[in-house]
Amino acid sequence: MKYYLKFFLLGVLTLSLGFTACDKDDDDTVNYAKTLVKYLEQDDFVNTYMPAMISATDVKTENTAGTAYIIDLRGADAFAAGHIENAVNVTLTDVVNHVETTDLTNYNKIVMVCYSGQTASYATSILRLLGHSNVYCLKFGMCSWHQDFAGSWPSNISNTYATQLTTDVTEKNATGSLPKFTTSSTDGEGILDERVDLVLTEWGDATTTASAVFANPDDYYIVNYWSEAHYNLGHIPGAIQYTPKASMSLEADLQTLPTDKTIVVYCYTGQTSAHLTAYLRILGYDAKSLLFGINGMAYDWAVNNEMTHWDDAYIMGYDYVTE
Image (tube, rainbow, N blue to C red):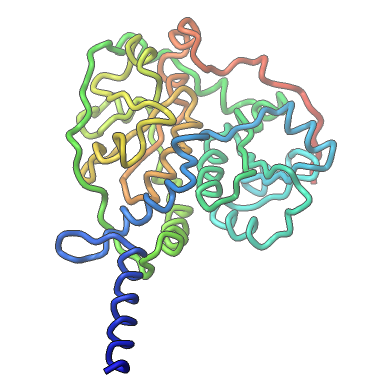
């Protein structure tokens, strides 16, 4: 009798552990997205610290001290034409593997660098979600390092859509469900690893432009990722306000995002929205970051309302090397 009781209790324990490893839908299938969200919200980079950015001045200080490991995500030709001294050239698709197979214990910070700061923001978010809490992206990218690389920002600021901004409020969707996807893992860490492998390849599909959004606004669920006060000053018609460091949690408004429509996230510069887009795509949402944010559609309006904006004063003129 004791023999059978022992195996009965062992079976109950195993079943209990299985249910703590993953959530279940009503039809008893694994809810991978919910398991993943709960795992990520244990640290909750998205709703506490994001975005993780660093200025060119601070990068220079850390680099001079030898305490920053700098990863340049630009193409090989651009890297060869000029880059920050000590930087290494790594592709976006290989950045996680590079960070996790390189001994970086002697560095205080790992800095992601690209042209304008947006690709680097995407990479930074992914690495942060994987637990690399000392990763930052260079604010405004190489545009802020030296005039020779500053083309991306000045050529992409625009006032084209300033007159089309509105103060009309659009309410959030009702709370719904999380996206559906499958992986070979059922625990949070394993699911995250598999989703990251996919999302690293999707940056080309994870962006959009102001012209595309204004041409067909009804095609998108538009997330205004600003404070409510700034939202009330003006925003893209139909955009819905979500508060940074607050709205994107299970207990708040995450599940008001649609799973059957493309989500466009916009912020001031496109850097915070790139951070958030990486997170949402990992969760299975069809999310896109609006490149250059409000700077790319109503630059003067943003300046007048004291929002974060590109300024030539950010160009520091620091030395660089070629090879």
